[in-house]
Image 1 (cartoon, rainbow, N blue to C red):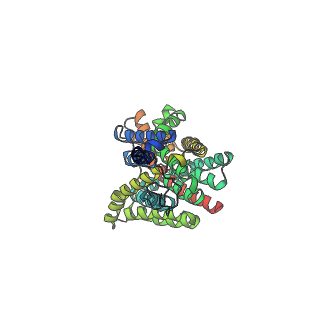
Image 2 (cartoon, rainbow, N blue to C red):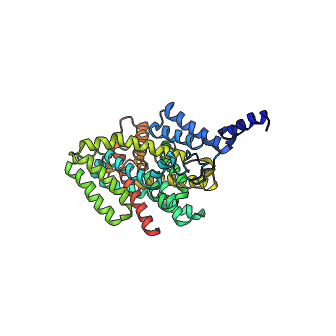
Image 3 (cartoon, one colour):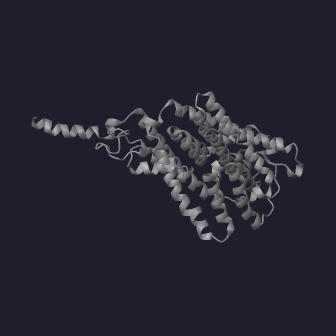
Length: 393
């Protein structure tokens, strides 16, 4: 070997190990998506708590390297840096996603951040949250028609209500190979909930309906607030034990909040803990979009099916409120703009109700009213997940 080869071979090997040598068009597309998410979070201040870790995760997951992502952990060529390489730090972040650690923690935090007063004040709002679960079963039916097996279709169904934790929970049990596409779809709908829901809400309501003013929620006693998570836990989990990891943590978080004797725990769960879990979930979720695994025909169909179901769930919720109003007196009518909040994107969809209501009446605040069906939607989707697991497992 001459001197030229001695110099050239190491340089050639180094170049082969750079990302420039291993780039594909799919990697470039995913990197651009990650950068767009970061731009929206920082420049537009759009869902920054989720979009920044998600965007960085997408970039981390799509920096290509020479070693195969499918090498065994014992293989000496395995650098242990990719999310699908056993032993890498990203691999263990993803472990929390596929083994139901993140979904349970997210529901714990959600419970500690949710006020069920609106639901207790006006119990009929529960019906809106339950009606909107048609998105889950609509997506389930569409997925079956699209050639997915029942277990895969069930996991796809939860994305139809933009329920990230529940879709992660059921996908990890029924379709681990599709968990990335299913959960990413659910969170994308949640992130862009206003863009998706606002046009549907406008099309399906009249001007006079959009300015309906609802009665202020009645004052709810501390006893009622404490009883709800206890009674709710017993009723839902006795009915659907398969949902225990979700509903158990949701009601635990809410009881910690409402008991009034665990303020330090409530502040920790609703503050530092939720921030940590969101960062870890977003990072793991983003990194799981590795181009050579994420880019396929099934991912596209999952996204389209879930999007259609999410639109249907939004529209059905709005129309269901209009149907309810046929049987309510003028003083008790419900503004159909809160019908969109029956999906599980809490509190994003409730915020959409508030924004859209203020567009037509600057003094008509719908947020507290919308939180009723929004909270019911979270409980409803967790129950639906348990029902599907019970039937199909």
